[in-house]
Length: 141
Ligand SMILES: [Zn+2]
Image (cartoon, rainbow, N blue to C red):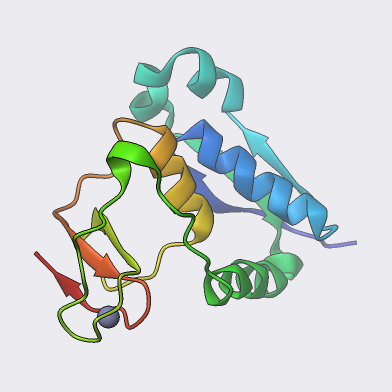
């Protein structure tokens, strides 16, 4: 009985934290959030308390990594509607129209990050914005 509990990830967005928590619970992986209520009620307080912490058993970390990675491989980009539709944008590398306007990063984002960023007008992470091709991964301004 030496199951050690560790903070797997810290979220500054409680919605995001709950999405990941639900995902882990779906896979029957034990986890719990701490500082959630403070963050939800008092968002400006996040910095002071260090955000919402996702706590897991250390022994589950490999399984969690695989679980979250799996989602990225199955990445399906939800179709944007109305004003958000970037219909004129075509990837300059592969010609795919499956291009989103997002954060400039070489790391693929999980589907839940994409969803959360659509829901939130102000996404907590600061990054340069650019177009990102979901087919080939090419990024361009
Ligand atoms: Zn492309």
